[in-house]
Length: 305
Image 1 (cartoon, rainbow, N blue to C red):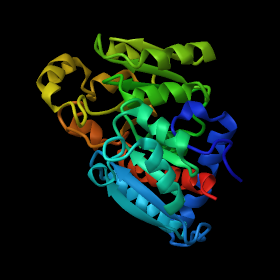
Image 2: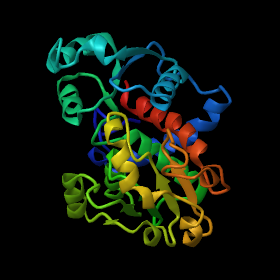
Image 3: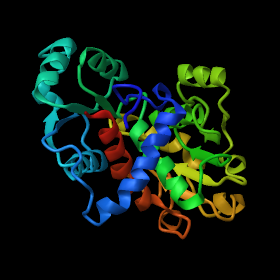
Image 4: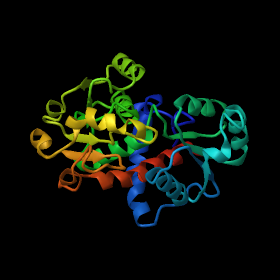
């Protein structure tokens, strides 16, 4: 079993059938991995993990995932590899294709990752770019389905910035029949091209500036930091702009009674989400963090020969 495409750069690049393959394999592998009984289906395979941004979840989840499959990983920083600076993206792609079996890259510029994939002979997995965060959202969908059954016909509401996560949720709504709402301040909407493509595909999504109305009846309420790495200088302005978008128990009072609360982490507790919500009975935040590993392991297994 494999995916239809060589790389995993965006959820929108894959068919619903391929995305379902990832989710079903993740569900199958998860109990085996937890019991340390997962077969080593990919022995002697090496995945390079390239980082321009520091990470807890991305690094640990990807490195342990490939090891659980019987392979190994290499941790490489942007300073060491010098993509597009010390050496052209084309040449890096060609050289790395001779050394390793796959590359996971956590980068800034999405177009540079696309170019890397274009010239690589091995799978490239997007661990995060400024445009997309597809592996996170695949883990999120896995979490939704564990707690609420199928994501079909559910309403997922993201309260906060229309960032790379919002873009990936919109891409997911192009492939799965659920309703996505992004509640964000004016001027913080998702990427125009992403929304335009979703509209053409008939995806069910909308953008609103009213978080209280958005979460009414919602099954999933999703939070993220109001500012990410590289946006620290904007933090003061963003805290002001997002003041009404902090998730509180009061805001959630009219959500579906069985709703779940998610946060991709790291969380700035007290800013975008209160402790009462983060640690409350509806929170599945740490289940969600664990599922990064299981979703990504399935992606690796299905892409890597």
